[in-house]
Length: 462
Ligand SMILES: Cc1ncc(COP(=O)(O)O)c(C=O)c1O
Ligand SMILES: N[C@@H](CCOP(=O)(O)O)C(=O)O
Image 1 (cartoon, rainbow, N blue to C red):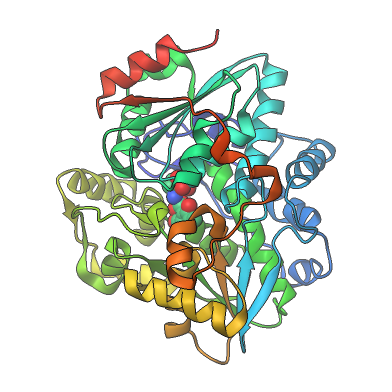
Image 2 (cartoon, rainbow, N blue to C red):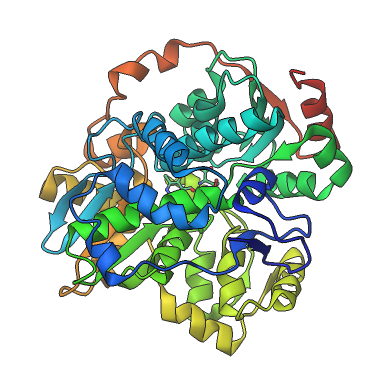
Protein backbone atom coordinates (compact mmCIF):
# COMPACT_ATOMS: atom_id res chain seq x y z
CA UNK A 1 0.00 0.00 0.00
CA UNK A 2 1.48 3.35 -1.09
CA UNK A 3 0.32 6.82 -0.12
CA UNK A 4 0.27 9.71 -2.59
CA UNK A 5 -0.08 13.46 -2.11
CA UNK A 6 -3.18 15.40 -3.14
CA UNK A 7 -0.82 17.92 -4.79
CA UNK A 8 0.94 15.33 -6.91
CA UNK A 9 4.64 16.08 -6.57
CA UNK A 10 5.73 14.71 -3.17
CA UNK A 11 7.18 11.20 -3.18
CA UNK A 12 4.81 8.26 -2.62
CA UNK A 13 5.33 6.80 0.84
CA UNK A 14 4.59 3.67 2.86
CA UNK A 15 2.04 3.82 5.69
CA UNK A 16 4.79 4.22 8.28
CA UNK A 17 6.49 7.01 6.34
CA UNK A 18 3.21 8.83 5.69
CA UNK A 19 2.26 8.54 9.37
CA UNK A 20 5.58 9.93 10.62
CA UNK A 21 5.76 12.60 7.90
CA UNK A 22 2.43 14.38 8.40
CA UNK A 23 1.99 17.01 5.68
CA UNK A 24 3.40 16.01 2.28
CA UNK A 25 6.45 18.04 1.21
CA UNK A 26 4.46 19.63 -1.64
CA UNK A 27 1.96 20.97 0.91
CA UNK A 28 -0.64 18.27 0.14
CA UNK A 29 -2.25 15.56 2.23
CA UNK A 30 -1.43 11.89 1.89
CA UNK A 31 -4.16 9.48 0.73
CA UNK A 32 -3.93 5.78 -0.16
CA UNK A 33 -3.18 5.17 -3.82
CA UNK A 34 -6.19 2.84 -3.88
CA UNK A 35 -8.81 2.28 -1.22
CA UNK A 36 -9.01 -1.39 -0.26
CA UNK A 37 -12.48 -2.94 -0.13
CA UNK A 38 -14.11 -5.51 2.13
CA UNK A 39 -16.58 -7.95 0.57
CA UNK A 40 -20.21 -8.23 1.68
CA UNK A 41 -19.27 -11.46 3.42
CA UNK A 42 -16.28 -9.90 5.19
CA UNK A 43 -18.43 -7.02 6.45
CA UNK A 44 -21.17 -9.41 7.58
CA UNK A 45 -18.55 -11.37 9.53
CA UNK A 46 -17.84 -8.27 11.67
CA UNK A 47 -21.23 -8.65 13.40
CA UNK A 48 -20.81 -9.57 17.07
CA UNK A 49 -17.05 -8.89 17.03
CA UNK A 50 -15.39 -6.66 19.62
CA UNK A 51 -14.43 -3.08 18.72
CA UNK A 52 -10.78 -4.18 18.70
CA UNK A 53 -11.42 -7.06 16.30
CA UNK A 54 -13.32 -4.80 13.90
CA UNK A 55 -10.53 -2.21 14.16
CA UNK A 56 -7.99 -4.84 13.11
CA UNK A 57 -10.07 -6.07 10.16
CA UNK A 58 -10.81 -2.55 8.87
CA UNK A 59 -7.35 -1.01 9.27
CA UNK A 60 -5.12 -3.99 8.44
CA UNK A 61 -5.34 -3.56 4.63
CA UNK A 62 -4.02 0.01 4.92
CA UNK A 63 -0.88 -0.52 6.97
CA UNK A 64 1.18 -2.71 4.63
CA UNK A 65 4.16 -4.23 6.42
CA UNK A 66 4.51 -1.43 8.96
CA UNK A 67 3.49 -3.79 11.79
CA UNK A 68 3.09 -7.56 11.93
CA UNK A 69 -0.44 -8.76 12.64
CA UNK A 70 0.58 -9.70 16.16
CA UNK A 71 2.08 -6.29 16.92
CA UNK A 72 -0.80 -4.41 15.30
CA UNK A 73 -3.37 -6.36 17.35
CA UNK A 74 -1.41 -5.58 20.52
CA UNK A 75 -1.28 -1.84 19.69
CA UNK A 76 -5.02 -1.78 19.06
CA UNK A 77 -5.75 -3.60 22.33
CA UNK A 78 -3.51 -1.24 24.28
CA UNK A 79 -5.04 1.86 22.64
CA UNK A 80 -8.66 0.99 23.28
CA UNK A 81 -8.19 -0.38 26.80
CA UNK A 82 -8.30 3.26 27.95
CA UNK A 83 -11.78 3.90 26.53
CA UNK A 84 -14.06 3.80 29.56
CA UNK A 85 -16.91 1.79 28.06
CA UNK A 86 -16.83 -1.91 27.26
CA UNK A 87 -18.43 -1.30 23.85
CA UNK A 88 -15.88 1.55 23.27
CA UNK A 89 -18.39 3.36 20.98
CA UNK A 90 -21.87 2.55 22.32
CA UNK A 91 -25.10 3.69 20.66
CA UNK A 92 -28.29 4.97 22.23
CA UNK A 93 -31.60 5.47 20.46
CA UNK A 94 -32.95 9.02 20.22
CA UNK A 95 -36.07 8.40 18.12
CA UNK A 96 -37.43 5.68 15.81
CA UNK A 97 -34.54 4.95 13.43
CA UNK A 98 -32.31 7.71 14.85
CA UNK A 99 -29.29 6.63 16.91
CA UNK A 100 -26.53 8.51 18.70
CA UNK A 101 -23.02 7.07 18.50
CA UNK A 102 -21.27 8.07 21.72
CA UNK A 103 -17.62 8.71 20.94
CA UNK A 104 -16.78 10.51 24.16
CA UNK A 105 -15.87 7.76 26.61
CA UNK A 106 -12.11 8.14 26.13
CA UNK A 107 -9.63 9.84 28.47
CA UNK A 108 -10.21 13.38 27.14
CA UNK A 109 -13.94 12.99 26.52
CA UNK A 110 -14.00 13.55 22.74
CA UNK A 111 -13.90 11.38 19.62
CA UNK A 112 -10.27 12.37 19.06
CA UNK A 113 -9.17 9.78 21.63
CA UNK A 114 -10.12 6.94 19.29
CA UNK A 115 -7.49 7.89 16.76
CA UNK A 116 -5.00 9.64 19.01
CA UNK A 117 -4.58 6.75 21.44
CA UNK A 118 -3.79 4.43 18.54
CA UNK A 119 -1.48 6.96 16.86
CA UNK A 120 0.34 7.28 20.19
CA UNK A 121 0.92 3.52 20.26
CA UNK A 122 1.97 3.40 16.60
CA UNK A 123 4.39 6.34 16.94
CA UNK A 124 6.04 4.83 20.03
CA UNK A 125 6.57 1.49 18.33
CA UNK A 126 7.80 2.94 15.02
CA UNK A 127 10.12 5.48 16.69
CA UNK A 128 11.35 2.95 19.25
CA UNK A 129 12.58 0.50 16.65
CA UNK A 130 14.24 3.27 14.62
CA UNK A 131 15.80 4.78 17.73
CA UNK A 132 14.65 8.23 16.57
CA UNK A 133 12.69 11.11 18.03
CA UNK A 134 10.18 13.67 16.67
CA UNK A 135 8.71 17.04 17.53
CA UNK A 136 4.95 16.95 17.24
CA UNK A 137 3.28 20.29 16.60
CA UNK A 138 -0.51 20.34 16.57
CA UNK A 139 -3.19 22.94 15.93
CA UNK A 140 -6.38 22.65 17.90
CA UNK A 141 -9.73 24.28 18.37
CA UNK A 142 -9.86 22.40 21.68
CA UNK A 143 -10.14 18.64 21.40
CA UNK A 144 -7.25 17.43 19.22
CA UNK A 145 -4.81 19.21 21.53
CA UNK A 146 -5.95 17.60 24.73
CA UNK A 147 -6.15 14.17 23.09
CA UNK A 148 -2.61 14.55 21.70
CA UNK A 149 -1.20 15.70 25.03
CA UNK A 150 -2.90 12.77 26.77
CA UNK A 151 -1.55 10.26 24.23
CA UNK A 152 2.07 11.54 24.15
CA UNK A 153 2.75 13.04 27.60
CA UNK A 154 5.80 11.66 29.39
CA UNK A 155 7.28 9.89 26.33
CA UNK A 156 11.01 10.47 26.06
CA UNK A 157 11.32 10.39 22.25
CA UNK A 158 8.58 12.96 21.56
CA UNK A 159 8.12 16.66 22.32
CA UNK A 160 4.61 18.01 21.83
CA UNK A 161 3.65 21.65 21.18
CA UNK A 162 -0.05 22.44 20.82
CA UNK A 163 -1.25 25.75 19.36
CA UNK A 164 -4.71 26.75 20.48
CA UNK A 165 -6.60 30.01 19.82
CA UNK A 166 -6.33 32.17 22.93
CA UNK A 167 -9.75 32.71 24.53
CA UNK A 168 -11.60 30.56 22.00
CA UNK A 169 -11.67 27.13 23.66
CA UNK A 170 -13.80 26.09 26.63
CA UNK A 171 -12.25 26.28 30.07
CA UNK A 172 -12.30 22.49 30.42
CA UNK A 173 -10.57 22.09 27.05
CA UNK A 174 -7.94 24.68 28.00
CA UNK A 175 -7.24 23.12 31.37
CA UNK A 176 -6.93 19.67 29.82
CA UNK A 177 -4.06 21.11 27.76
CA UNK A 178 -2.45 23.38 30.34
CA UNK A 179 -2.48 21.24 33.50
CA UNK A 180 -0.48 18.11 32.59
CA UNK A 181 2.84 18.27 34.46
CA UNK A 182 4.97 16.24 32.04
CA UNK A 183 7.80 18.43 30.72
CA UNK A 184 7.63 17.14 27.11
CA UNK A 185 4.21 18.72 26.50
CA UNK A 186 3.63 22.44 25.89
CA UNK A 187 0.40 24.38 25.48
CA UNK A 188 0.78 27.54 23.36
CA UNK A 189 -2.05 30.10 23.34
CA UNK A 190 -1.91 31.89 20.01
CA UNK A 191 -3.30 35.36 19.40
CA UNK A 192 -5.68 34.36 16.63
CA UNK A 193 -8.31 31.80 15.72
CA UNK A 194 -8.04 28.11 14.86
CA UNK A 195 -7.39 28.86 11.19
CA UNK A 196 -4.36 30.92 12.23
CA UNK A 197 -3.10 27.99 14.34
CA UNK A 198 -3.55 25.54 11.46
CA UNK A 199 -1.99 27.96 8.94
CA UNK A 200 1.12 28.45 11.11
CA UNK A 201 1.37 24.66 11.56
CA UNK A 202 1.33 24.19 7.78
CA UNK A 203 3.88 27.04 7.42
CA UNK A 204 6.19 25.10 9.73
CA UNK A 205 5.81 21.97 7.59
CA UNK A 206 6.54 24.00 4.47
CA UNK A 207 9.72 25.48 6.01
CA UNK A 208 12.04 22.55 5.28
CA UNK A 209 14.97 23.87 7.30
CA UNK A 210 12.82 24.06 10.43
CA UNK A 211 10.88 20.89 9.59
CA UNK A 212 13.99 18.76 9.12
CA UNK A 213 15.88 20.48 11.92
CA UNK A 214 13.34 19.61 14.62
CA UNK A 215 12.08 16.41 12.92
CA UNK A 216 8.58 17.80 12.72
CA UNK A 217 5.62 15.40 12.87
CA UNK A 218 1.88 16.06 12.91
CA UNK A 219 -1.04 14.39 14.62
CA UNK A 220 -3.83 16.53 13.27
CA UNK A 221 -6.03 14.85 10.71
CA UNK A 222 -3.36 15.97 8.24
CA UNK A 223 -1.99 12.59 9.32
CA UNK A 224 -3.63 9.74 7.41
CA UNK A 225 -3.35 7.52 10.49
CA UNK A 226 -5.85 9.79 12.27
CA UNK A 227 -8.43 9.48 9.50
CA UNK A 228 -7.90 5.73 9.24
CA UNK A 229 -8.58 5.05 12.92
CA UNK A 230 -11.81 7.05 12.64
CA UNK A 231 -13.10 4.75 9.88
CA UNK A 232 -13.58 1.93 12.37
CA UNK A 233 -16.60 3.24 14.27
CA UNK A 234 -18.55 3.69 11.05
CA UNK A 235 -18.24 -0.07 10.63
CA UNK A 236 -19.02 -1.06 14.24
CA UNK A 237 -22.14 1.13 14.35
CA UNK A 238 -23.48 0.27 10.89
CA UNK A 239 -22.99 -3.46 11.37
CA UNK A 240 -24.78 -3.34 14.72
CA UNK A 241 -27.81 -1.92 12.87
CA UNK A 242 -27.84 -4.61 10.19
CA UNK A 243 -25.22 -3.61 7.61
CA UNK A 244 -24.23 -4.87 5.09
CA UNK A 245 -27.76 -6.21 4.51
CA UNK A 246 -29.26 -2.85 5.41
CA UNK A 247 -28.16 0.66 4.43
CA UNK A 248 -27.53 3.27 7.11
CA UNK A 249 -26.87 7.01 7.01
CA UNK A 250 -24.60 9.18 9.17
CA UNK A 251 -24.72 12.79 10.27
CA UNK A 252 -21.37 14.17 11.37
CA UNK A 253 -20.72 17.45 13.22
CA UNK A 254 -18.01 18.84 10.98
CA UNK A 255 -15.17 21.35 11.11
CA UNK A 256 -11.88 20.13 9.66
CA UNK A 257 -13.67 17.44 7.58
CA UNK A 258 -11.58 14.56 9.01
CA UNK A 259 -14.40 12.64 10.64
CA UNK A 260 -16.84 12.84 7.72
CA UNK A 261 -14.00 11.93 5.35
CA UNK A 262 -13.45 8.79 7.43
CA UNK A 263 -17.12 7.97 6.74
CA UNK A 264 -16.51 8.44 3.03
CA UNK A 265 -13.56 6.04 3.24
CA UNK A 266 -15.81 3.48 4.98
CA UNK A 267 -18.29 3.85 2.12
CA UNK A 268 -15.56 3.41 -0.49
CA UNK A 269 -14.43 0.28 1.37
CA UNK A 270 -17.87 -1.23 0.77
CA UNK A 271 -19.93 -0.22 3.80
CA UNK A 272 -23.46 0.44 2.47
CA UNK A 273 -23.83 4.08 3.53
CA UNK A 274 -26.88 5.79 2.07
CA UNK A 275 -26.13 9.41 3.01
CA UNK A 276 -23.22 11.16 4.71
CA UNK A 277 -24.49 14.45 6.07
CA UNK A 278 -22.08 17.24 6.97
CA UNK A 279 -23.51 19.26 9.89
CA UNK A 280 -21.99 22.69 10.49
CA UNK A 281 -22.59 25.40 13.06
CA UNK A 282 -22.98 29.07 12.06
CA UNK A 283 -19.48 28.85 10.51
CA UNK A 284 -21.12 27.14 7.57
CA UNK A 285 -18.57 27.42 4.76
CA UNK A 286 -18.84 23.68 4.05
CA UNK A 287 -22.62 23.73 3.96
CA UNK A 288 -22.58 26.67 1.55
CA UNK A 289 -20.00 24.99 -0.64
CA UNK A 290 -21.90 21.71 -0.78
CA UNK A 291 -25.01 23.70 -1.74
CA UNK A 292 -23.13 24.99 -4.77
CA UNK A 293 -22.07 28.44 -3.56
CA UNK A 294 -18.33 27.87 -3.85
CA UNK A 295 -15.78 27.80 -1.06
CA UNK A 296 -15.28 31.40 0.03
CA UNK A 297 -13.72 32.35 3.36
CA UNK A 298 -15.37 34.84 5.67
CA UNK A 299 -14.83 35.87 9.26
CA UNK A 300 -15.00 33.12 11.91
CA UNK A 301 -17.81 33.73 14.39
CA UNK A 302 -17.11 32.28 17.85
CA UNK A 303 -19.89 29.82 18.70
CA UNK A 304 -21.06 27.54 21.50
CA UNK A 305 -19.56 24.64 19.52
CA UNK A 306 -16.05 26.17 19.35
CA UNK A 307 -14.26 23.06 18.10
CA UNK A 308 -16.06 23.54 14.77
CA UNK A 309 -15.27 27.26 14.38
CA UNK A 310 -13.23 26.69 11.23
CA UNK A 311 -13.05 28.34 7.81
CA UNK A 312 -10.18 26.44 6.20
CA UNK A 313 -11.27 22.85 6.50
CA UNK A 314 -8.09 20.89 5.97
CA UNK A 315 -9.48 17.53 4.81
CA UNK A 316 -11.80 19.08 2.27
CA UNK A 317 -8.67 18.96 0.12
CA UNK A 318 -8.84 15.15 0.26
CA UNK A 319 -12.51 15.27 -0.80
CA UNK A 320 -11.70 17.65 -3.66
CA UNK A 321 -8.86 15.41 -4.84
CA UNK A 322 -11.32 12.56 -5.37
CA UNK A 323 -14.05 14.86 -6.70
CA UNK A 324 -11.59 16.04 -9.39
CA UNK A 325 -10.82 12.40 -10.27
CA UNK A 326 -7.48 12.70 -8.48
CA UNK A 327 -6.30 15.53 -10.71
CA UNK A 328 -3.59 17.02 -8.43
CA UNK A 329 -3.18 20.09 -10.67
CA UNK A 330 -6.83 21.01 -10.13
CA UNK A 331 -6.29 20.76 -6.36
CA UNK A 332 -3.13 22.89 -6.52
CA UNK A 333 -5.09 25.51 -8.47
CA UNK A 334 -8.00 25.54 -5.97
CA UNK A 335 -5.67 25.73 -2.97
CA UNK A 336 -3.84 28.68 -4.56
CA UNK A 337 -7.22 30.41 -5.01
CA UNK A 338 -8.15 29.58 -1.41
CA UNK A 339 -5.04 31.41 -0.22
CA UNK A 340 -6.48 34.49 -2.01
CA UNK A 341 -9.93 34.08 -0.42
CA UNK A 342 -11.77 31.19 -2.02
CA UNK A 343 -12.66 29.18 -5.10
CA UNK A 344 -15.59 27.84 -7.08
CA UNK A 345 -15.92 24.10 -7.62
CA UNK A 346 -16.37 22.88 -11.18
CA UNK A 347 -19.72 21.38 -12.14
CA UNK A 348 -18.29 17.87 -12.52
CA UNK A 349 -16.53 17.97 -9.16
CA UNK A 350 -19.68 19.37 -7.54
CA UNK A 351 -21.73 16.47 -8.90
CA UNK A 352 -19.20 14.05 -7.51
CA UNK A 353 -19.21 15.74 -4.07
CA UNK A 354 -23.03 15.70 -4.01
CA UNK A 355 -23.01 12.00 -4.85
CA UNK A 356 -21.34 11.38 -1.49
CA UNK A 357 -22.14 14.27 0.82
CA UNK A 358 -25.27 16.15 1.92
CA UNK A 359 -25.13 19.06 4.34
CA UNK A 360 -27.04 21.19 6.78
CA UNK A 361 -26.37 23.85 9.40
CA UNK A 362 -27.58 24.78 12.86
CA UNK A 363 -27.78 28.29 14.27
CA UNK A 364 -26.78 28.97 17.85
CA UNK A 365 -30.41 29.12 18.90
CA UNK A 366 -31.27 25.85 17.15
CA UNK A 367 -28.32 24.18 18.84
CA UNK A 368 -29.49 25.34 22.27
CA UNK A 369 -33.07 24.27 21.54
CA UNK A 370 -31.87 20.83 20.46
CA UNK A 371 -29.94 20.34 23.72
CA UNK A 372 -33.05 21.35 25.69
CA UNK A 373 -35.46 19.26 23.65
CA UNK A 374 -33.33 16.11 23.50
CA UNK A 375 -32.92 16.07 27.27
CA UNK A 376 -36.69 16.34 27.72
CA UNK A 377 -37.53 13.81 25.01
CA UNK A 378 -34.82 11.20 25.54
CA UNK A 379 -32.91 11.94 28.75
CA UNK A 380 -29.70 12.34 26.68
CA UNK A 381 -27.54 15.34 27.55
CA UNK A 382 -25.82 16.50 24.35
CA UNK A 383 -22.70 18.61 23.95
CA UNK A 384 -23.25 21.55 21.56
CA UNK A 385 -21.31 19.88 18.72
CA UNK A 386 -23.38 16.72 18.95
CA UNK A 387 -26.50 18.89 19.14
CA UNK A 388 -25.57 20.52 15.82
CA UNK A 389 -25.46 17.00 14.36
CA UNK A 390 -28.75 15.91 15.93
CA UNK A 391 -30.56 19.04 14.73
CA UNK A 392 -29.38 18.57 11.15
CA UNK A 393 -30.08 14.82 11.23
CA UNK A 394 -33.63 15.30 12.52
CA UNK A 395 -34.29 17.81 9.77
CA UNK A 396 -32.80 15.81 6.92
CA UNK A 397 -33.18 12.15 7.71
CA UNK A 398 -35.24 9.74 5.70
CA UNK A 399 -37.53 7.84 8.11
CA UNK A 400 -36.95 4.53 6.32
CA UNK A 401 -33.14 4.47 6.67
CA UNK A 402 -31.50 4.28 10.11
CA UNK A 403 -29.62 7.50 10.87
CA UNK A 404 -26.57 7.47 13.12
CA UNK A 405 -25.48 10.85 14.47
CA UNK A 406 -21.97 11.06 15.86
CA UNK A 407 -21.81 12.44 19.43
CA UNK A 408 -18.32 13.88 19.28
CA UNK A 409 -17.76 15.22 22.79
CA UNK A 410 -18.99 14.82 26.34
CA UNK A 411 -21.35 17.57 27.57
CA UNK A 412 -19.07 18.23 30.56
CA UNK A 413 -16.47 19.76 28.21
CA UNK A 414 -18.93 22.58 27.47
CA UNK A 415 -20.78 23.02 30.78
CA UNK A 416 -21.79 26.67 30.30
CA UNK A 417 -23.80 26.09 27.12
CA UNK A 418 -25.31 22.88 28.44
CA UNK A 419 -26.33 24.51 31.72
CA UNK A 420 -27.85 27.45 29.87
CA UNK A 421 -29.91 25.10 27.72
CA UNK A 422 -31.02 22.66 30.43
CA UNK A 423 -30.34 24.09 33.88
CA UNK A 424 -28.06 21.08 34.46
CA UNK A 425 -24.32 21.57 34.88
CA UNK A 426 -22.82 18.29 33.71
CA UNK A 427 -20.16 16.78 35.98
CA UNK A 428 -16.71 15.76 34.83
CA UNK A 429 -15.90 12.11 35.55
CA UNK A 430 -14.42 11.57 39.07
CA UNK A 431 -10.85 11.18 37.70
CA UNK A 432 -11.04 14.79 36.42
CA UNK A 433 -12.91 16.44 39.27
CA UNK A 434 -9.80 18.34 40.46
CA UNK A 435 -9.17 19.81 36.98
CA UNK A 436 -10.01 23.32 38.19
CA UNK A 437 -7.63 23.05 41.18
CA UNK A 438 -4.58 22.08 39.13
CA UNK A 439 -1.89 24.65 38.18
CA UNK A 440 -1.86 25.78 34.57
CA UNK A 441 1.27 26.01 32.40
CA UNK A 442 0.76 27.92 29.15
CA UNK A 443 2.73 30.32 26.94
CA UNK A 444 0.93 33.11 25.12
CA UNK A 445 2.45 33.83 21.71
CA UNK A 446 1.69 36.18 18.81
CA UNK A 447 0.41 34.85 15.50
CA UNK A 448 3.92 34.97 14.12
CA UNK A 449 5.80 32.10 12.51
CA UNK A 450 9.27 33.21 13.59
CA UNK A 451 8.18 33.63 17.21
CA UNK A 452 6.61 30.19 17.22
CA UNK A 453 9.63 28.49 15.65
CA UNK A 454 11.97 30.19 18.10
CA UNK A 455 9.81 29.14 21.03
CA UNK A 456 9.68 25.53 19.87
CA UNK A 457 13.42 25.32 19.16
CA UNK A 458 14.16 26.83 22.55
CA UNK A 459 12.02 24.34 24.43
CA UNK A 460 13.01 21.00 22.91
CA UNK A 461 13.98 18.48 25.53
CA UNK A 462 17.02 17.04 23.76
C1 LIG B 1 -16.26 17.95 19.54
C2 LIG B 1 -15.97 18.06 18.09
N1 LIG B 1 -16.95 17.82 17.23
C3 LIG B 1 -16.75 17.89 15.90
C4 LIG B 1 -15.54 18.25 15.38
C5 LIG B 1 -15.36 18.31 13.89
O1 LIG B 1 -14.63 17.20 13.46
P1 LIG B 1 -13.78 17.30 12.12
O2 LIG B 1 -12.77 18.36 12.35
O3 LIG B 1 -13.17 15.96 11.96
O4 LIG B 1 -14.73 17.67 11.05
C6 LIG B 1 -14.48 18.55 16.25
C7 LIG B 1 -13.13 18.96 15.77
O5 LIG B 1 -12.48 18.32 15.08
C8 LIG B 1 -14.69 18.41 17.63
O6 LIG B 1 -13.70 18.61 18.48
N1 LIG C 1 -11.82 20.40 16.07
C1 LIG C 1 -10.45 20.07 16.04
C2 LIG C 1 -9.70 20.84 14.98
C3 LIG C 1 -8.51 20.07 14.49
O1 LIG C 1 -8.97 18.94 13.84
P1 LIG C 1 -8.09 17.71 13.37
O2 LIG C 1 -9.07 16.59 13.27
O3 LIG C 1 -7.48 18.10 12.10
O4 LIG C 1 -7.04 17.44 14.40
C4 LIG C 1 -9.87 20.21 17.43
O5 LIG C 1 -10.60 19.95 18.37
O6 LIG C 1 -8.75 20.58 17.60
